[in-house]
Length: 282
Length: 282
Image (tube, rainbow over all chains, first blue to last red; front, side, top):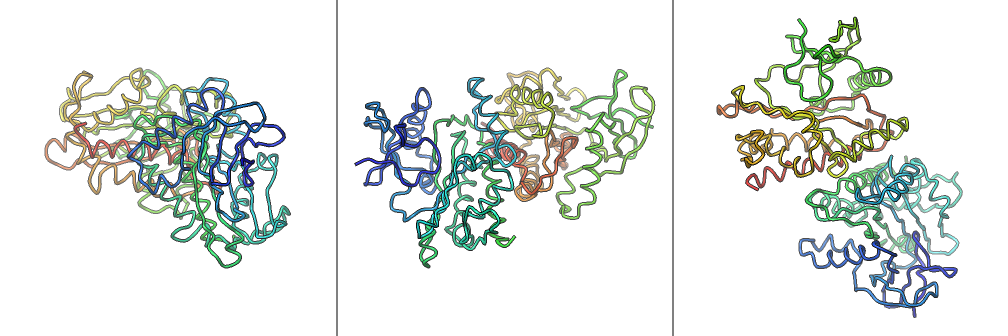
């Protein structure tokens, strides 16, 4: 039984007769292949990544497991459509809080068609990608009660300024989250979710160390997902903080050069997270 | 007595009746203030930088000493012109080998006028700035004999591809440098100039650590100079490797965000230098 994912925060959604990803009950995520080159590039990336023996296991864990491709009835009723079969990253998580952060001040590879470059450049200049080296593409903060869900709409997400991003990164780990912007986020969960030896900062630093050395892949328009279980941590259980990389339709061969665009944005994000851990009451 | 510097490898030169920098015999470098905002911005940067007590001394050493501004007879005979009075970085060095590397895949601040952005973007796309996060703006490799000087012209510098840059970074520390491109650079000086506890890599790593944390300045279109004395090292003496940052006409307030554009390019350059140290015979 396939259905639309409950915890999708960005990207195309399988609703209202549109083409979007589906999940099953066995923890698999079915992502429709994008049209043209993008779909085939994403498949090629996963195949290449899976067979690459140079990738350390602790880095491989930051990527969804790839199970191949499969023809499936599309969510928009248009008949059979090829899908990537991936690990459902939200599977097994209880009411996860999720944030999708698109990394890099430049989301376009140099070899792209001119109209695509101009479209991306405009989005990068119109968002925090240029000033921050990353932008938030979507999020949900999920408490233990349904009423505690905070899932801002696309319009709000697209309008985020640099200061808004700083605030949202704080709200993501606060116990007093609400759409009311006058409430000062308490960052009560910062030390357990962002901090600590298994927290999000520690994971980002592992990823950074890899990006300082790896010259095989350049990731454009790729996102890092932050995930944790707020309900659990409020009940005194583990928050299971985790990061995952997703969206590989614009991955290029690194040709012996590091991905300085991704790395720069990642370092900028790390600096924000550090500041929240070290000055939660700012 | 003021004269044009002997060891300038990039930028406007005080020759043929043109406006350019001058040096005296006391180790000072007189840089004509650029027209409009650029000149005043560069003065403002130096004044701000000098009075900023948060800059550690080991980082301050990577910047030229600033002695103020002074009205001087311009090198183009146009009368008195305001000049920045700076430390002459080549002063005291014997036949220095110098490379000017402009850092960042993006050389334009977001707030620039649209025509300036388009001009810079075109240069960044047409050079290695976009693929590498940096581009070489000029260099000279100086042996002990005059005949050993290699100082490629601007046309060659502007045409450098990614592979050319890799080669030039190797030639910069080779004993068998020549304009003849069929000679394979031996990287004989890599371990003493790039490597070691006081070498260029160690200095770049110090700079990187600062850029991972500092959120005060964003450096656009700024260069790192590599300098050392090849004649000395060939005679068994010290090579005095050093790096310095120059050109601050496009420095902006960091507004609490790291300079991810500079940092990304710096990390990319570091990776190239590491590869030369670890595989000099590649």
